[in-house]
Length: 205
View 1 (tube, helix red, strand yellow):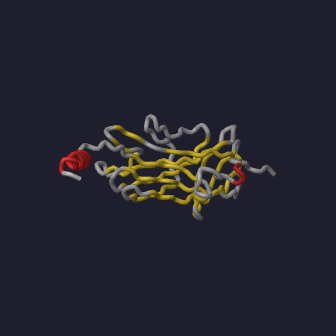
View 2: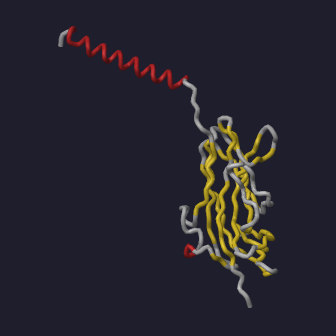
């Protein structure tokens, strides 16, 4: 191949090389507007979004075992400390509102503090059952057993007999030195919570 014939190929090669270098330089210095967030989810017994209750029946009794997993992922770009706060509510108690970023006003009975590295995912086991309940013009759930620990609660159902387990993610804020319900990303405030309904049946004797 003569130099005259090789020249167009050489020019094309140089052009492609300059293009690759330019793209690399621009991508290295171009501002990145990556969105930062947490993921919060609830998985069933086999770490899937199914099989939360035995026989897929959310109507449970004293001693009915449930094995769940709390899914948490950190996509905030830095190591963060969070607390998963667990609450039990009846159908009329105020639930968390992620649109207004307001947690449930009801107290939590259990929390799971977690330190998450960048892009780390953690599965927190949550195996539980109702240990004690009584009837007082409505069913009152008195005690749970969670991960082999006894937990006192005192929540009374209304006429529909329904309850829900609520999980809220609270994030440690370095400025205030406290955990807050939510986080900032690109100047906006976000929050996350999930809950699972169940119906508790107290046998009558």
